[in-house]
Image 1: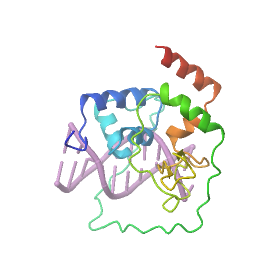
Image 2 (image 1 turned 120 degrees about the vertical axis):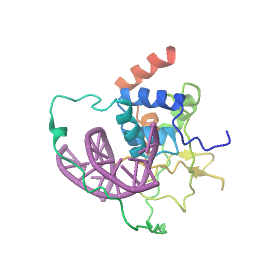
Image 3 (image 1 turned 60 degrees about the horizontal axis):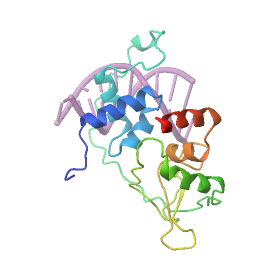
Image 4 (image 1 turned 135 degrees about the vertical axis):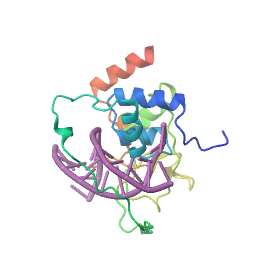
Length: 177
DNA sequence: CCCTGATTCGC
DNA sequence: GCGAATCAGG
């Protein structure tokens, strides 16, 4: 594993197909894959000819779209050092913890990249607040991934935390297989 | 505001 | 082939 794994290997493409067919959005897939943006995922999906996943009755996509995509002539993308300001502290989830241990065994599909765990200081409003480790210890971290709007967790952890009945059934089915 | 996929085009 | 930029819409 010398390289960061940025290229589309067969395994990654397969996972992409699986997740895409599973109904996950491009950003979710990108997050799970790691080291790729949703644009990359979408681009690959289109190249693979997987576009139009579910709905494909309307020809609305036939309309002329982007054409001024001349890319920014010089946009250095200034990254603003977000101050932690008023970070909405997350009440340590109660239920999820129980599930977490359980999930360790029959985890959904892919292992969480967890490339960016953050401390309370770096935690932002729209960051996943999935607790990792002992909250009483200084090594305590949060997932830190992009959280779903309205939810305190990222997509992956949200699934673990709030598993709907329907989803559970599906997961059990997969787990048994 | 957040997000979604779709498309174009420079690399 | 790849993906950032951009668009158009929800």
